[in-house]
Image (cartoon, rainbow, N blue to C red; front, side):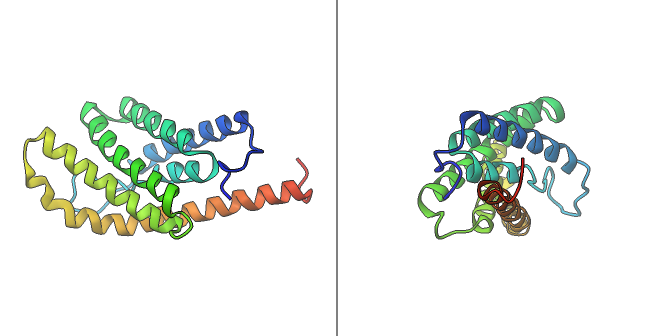
Length: 184
């Protein structure tokens, strides 16, 4: 059972978790700008902020995850980017959110965080290519698609593994708290 299905979580706890995840997503967005990638792909990033989106879906709710995604994209563009990066991120983030929402609504019992993360990364890259095709009025950007999908597989796997570990740790902590093993 996800926390969003758990009626025992208060609205204050949901807000607190979402705010902490937003802070983590912004920090990860900033930190990944310092990671040099030996890829021939301009503007490619690791997608570490996607960890916060996936954890928010699992531990809070789809609605909170939507707000987290919108705020993260907007604040990141204001602090670290440009109007162009906002549109690229918004297009990618929108498709990423949609695919994660579909997986959580219909397929969560059959697909792990790893699979969801890979699909999310792939859709984020496709969304950014669509934005680039519109902004630059050129379909030539789709020549990057095979490279981006390959990168989605690698980096989506990495973020999926981290999401699985975070979700497991939070559920174990909640179970210890509920059973009285851990004193607050």
